[in-house]
Image (cartoon, rainbow, N blue to C red; front, side, top):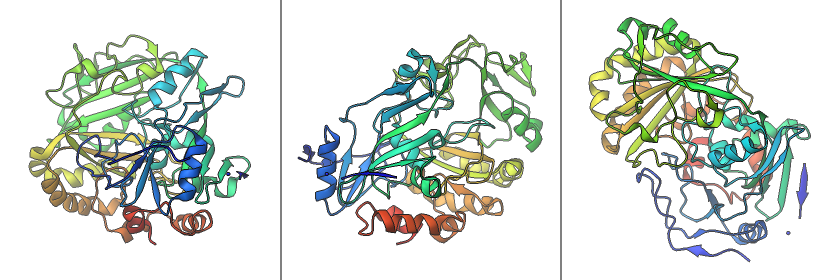
Amino acid sequence: MTITPASPGPALSRPGRSWSGTVDYGPGPLHVPSSVDQLRALVGSSARIRALGTRHSFSTVAASDAALVSLADLPPDLEFDTAARTVRVGAGVRYGELAVAAAEVGLALANMGSLPHISVGGASATGTHGSGDRLRSLANSVRAIELVTATGDLLTLDREQDPEIFGGVVLSLGALGVVTHLTLDLVPAFAMRQSVHLDFPAEAMNGADLLGMLAGGYSVSLFHHWDGHVAQAWVKQAVGSDEPLPEEWFGGRRAVAAVHPLPGMPADFCTDQTGQEGPSHERLPHFRLEFTPSNGEEIQSEYFVAREHLGEAVAAVMPLGERIRPLLHASEIRTVAADELWLSPAYQRDSACVHFTWKQLPAEVDALLPEIEERLAPFAPRPHWGKVFTTAPETVRAQYPRLPEFLALRDRLDPGRKFTNAYVDRLLGE
């Protein structure tokens, strides 16, 4: 552990709303410092403050009734170590921008989310993930983290130097401080191909076939509409490691034209689906960095269950299909490998994620979620921190055996609760 001992930047009148328009981040003010020194002074002089990322969360994880701070104007500080295969990067940098810079020095991110538009700091803090049987959430690539503590000091924590607490620091819901930089593990640059198969038969919705499809590439996503069959399988394969898929696969046929995962949306926003080889950062996300993938008029929910229970979990929710479909754009099934991060929904459990992209009908979605959660309850679902759910706080807390240690760490780093908000207090406990 390394601590570096210490004028706030300009403040905007209102933080505004989320990308989806469904979350009001609070009355503000929103501060946008342009240097770490400004950030340290701001944090040190604030009674309460929360960091705001790229506003892609659908929950109120980043909302606050006090001051907020954006890291968007801090320098990106991209510092690559090609021998060690690492990068030190500003927390406000978007993954898509980082991936392009890494490719220029012969390196790559091992994993990316479906959107390359999200920031490194925000995605790590909330447990954002991609999809792949062997791929852990994005936070697991973090090997060192620098954050401003409640006193305005700069604290550096390292996976190797601080192993007793590091699992609680990276995925912390913003409750420990304001992260300025992260050091990430990278891999040698590699090529990928992506193809999409469509219209799978109903019999392929069983657990064995779902898991078989999800194992069909480096990263796989299955889209469906709770009507009893998989509509689209997006399969991303590492060139040289994965064999190209046949025209017919698990009963689904290969798409002859590009598709979007949401019905009626143009495929221009999506990454290449032709099966042509390309850099991994141009295949791993579903959407291209240079486009806004949609207008954001949606709500998202997601639940992690043990991977071996995926078929049973989907079957348990399927009877609600007629009530789900009128509220739904599409559902996605993904996989995430187990990890050791204390607040990770994939903590010590290889997971399958049952995801819903809802139409922007918050009252109707809120009314239906308890019934979905009741049907998933036998499978001990862990909700995604950045998405909408109605699970009782005590039920959520019971899923995290290291929570007492996290709360003790929070008491140590932020005894005055400078970085808390209603969301954190309600779900983790005061």
